[in-house]
Length: 462
Image 1 (cartoon, helix red, strand yellow):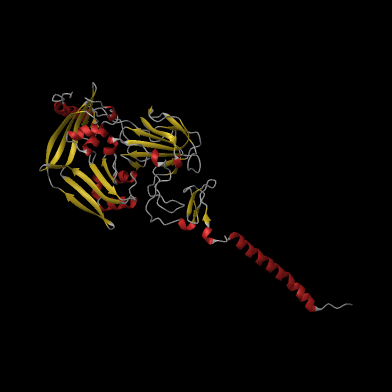
Image 2: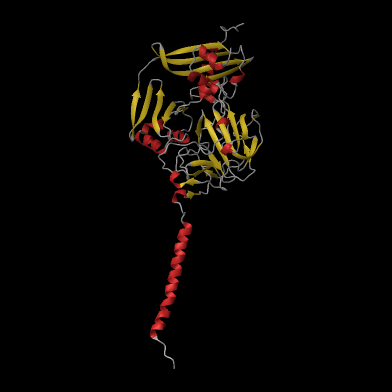
């Protein structure tokens, strides 16, 4: 019988695990080489949402889209400390609402905001609807508990930096009591201004020759006073339609320091357009009413849809772009609605823009009075035209997925005095007139003011 060498058996037993280990090792090396890009500098990041429509290849930028994604180099993603970029949901710059002379005196180009306290307002609610840094709002209200005592009709104002951090806050308690809160390092410091001027009445009367802004300034009114007048009567009168020979009479109280004044308050205004008179009279609640105590405001819808829908992305002026890691403001809210959902105008107004525009897709902008503008983006279909007059609740388009959009939704924005605000929490105009004792007091006040608004001294020029 043939003998089997034990060494041959051991060699055969060792051969199988050696081959297995070798195969596994080769597979691992192959997978690593196939998975790892040959040139690490060409590594790309493909997100699931289209935030930046740019491909970066060897430091050259080329417009590109990859399905529902975009491409950027990994080393192009930067930290949150960068300056804010433009919002991604934006029409082309040339498709912005064109301003006229009246818009220029109303809109504030700097980072300051003025506000009149309304019924139900809280300081935190006011500031956060304008996108002020919540940490600053918390710090201010925690340091100064007296700021919970805001009263209806009081004036407040504030300034922010480019990242919406609160720099200063002014609270006008009365004409001679102004409290100023300024950010110093990580705290707010309060100072009180109590210097007292002499409040004197000022009456300006004039005829329209070119336009209201120019002719009102000729009669000594400031841009701020003109802005207050146009806001008060924005729903009753289209100031662009004033004609040569139309008249205006304005009663103002100014705080005088010698021959100069710093503060003023509009008490009443009367504008005659043709044969029709328009009045705005200041009441004790800090709002303006017509000569009978009726409201000068228009009601707004809170939502641009027939039914409330889920908000897929909220208002956030400090939103961090998930692709670029830069602070990129989201100046509106996104409603998750299916394609073809009717979109409604939230208020009465005039369509300023209705067209396809860049990343906004099918885009509509509507001006409501002089103080408010709404924008609707990514529409599937536009149902209105530029220049068209519309009413609250009119169907203006159908929601869609046009422009830079990851899926069907409606992007909706609200601007007040040229500033984007949170449309879900913003204080919208309320059409309520005076009643009861407040109305009686108001009518008695108007009887004293009415003679001062007469046009007896005005005669049209030839």
